[in-house]
Amino acid sequence: MYILNRIGGTFILIFHSRKPSIRANAYELLARHLPDHHLSKNDILKDASIIRAGEYGEQRIDQFLKQFSSPEFLIGLNLTLPYEGETIQLDHLVITPSFALTIETKHLKGHIKLDYENGHMYRNENDHSLSTWIHPLVQAERHQAGLLNLFKKINVNLPVYSLIPFTHSSAHLEAVGTTNILPKNLFRAEQFTMKLRQLIETNCNRLYESIELNDIAASIISYGVNEKIYDVRKKYNLLPDSLQAGVWCHTCAQLSAEWRSQRFRCNICGEPCDETYLDTLYVYLTFIYPTISNRQARSLLKGCNADTVRYLLHKADLIPVNKTSKRVYKLRISHRDE
Ligand SMILES: [Zn+2]
Image (cartoon, rainbow, N blue to C red):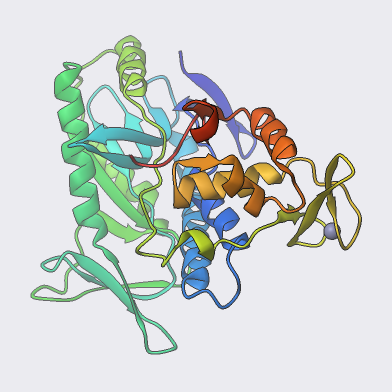
């Protein structure tokens, strides 16, 4: 059931693999279609880079985890599970015969202040602005509750713990508010191995046999859902006409391709760009509106007439909705949170 994955030259037991973030990729594609003066372009790119940095931090934790890997220590990567009509996203989920563990990795640098009473963490930026995030312990508590809720459904009674390692080498953590003591399960990554060993040593009561862990892992996976992209039109000031038309040329790194003599070709370097029109449609269908008409697609894909667009929408494997005159198209697999 589980698969052997190679991480840094060693095989470890992984029951769910990590895929590159759909959200980070979608944000990066969106930013390509916004002019530099758009109010939110920098925020969008910053959010994408935070997700990418998070993935980097998670890979550091993979390295620490591999020494624990065994048939009694199953590791799930990047699982999205339903909870209370929303989802919880677990960077790492470990299943052992005695306990389950969620690991919520943070890869932030600088002086991070953590205020548990108010439920947030924040950082003063060099430009005197303030970056704030939800307190990772609040997030971990929600993950724990969500996982316990799922365990109840699948009849599993493992206790659930969380560890919150900060992986950036220049992170300075400070608890603020009525206490200046950091929660025990929140620490810099250098302490990760020690914290995990403590957890293993204090939980030696076996509730399951290793053979049963595979079934538990399979049940958890069966509840997994795709990562979702929430409606960010307000947050990022996105209007239908915010998007710049055109098709991306990888060589020139701009929207310089147009339909000319039977294919998309870059106006600058002349290279054919056969695939990136799909990104243009994906950005519209993911961030602006769940369906697109032939006319709307024509205004986004430069140089196309109605017949060409009909052919391209078909080739893009979009699903047609409605009859001829009102026909629109939607994505076969949407990441929008409808
Ligand atoms: Zn080009």
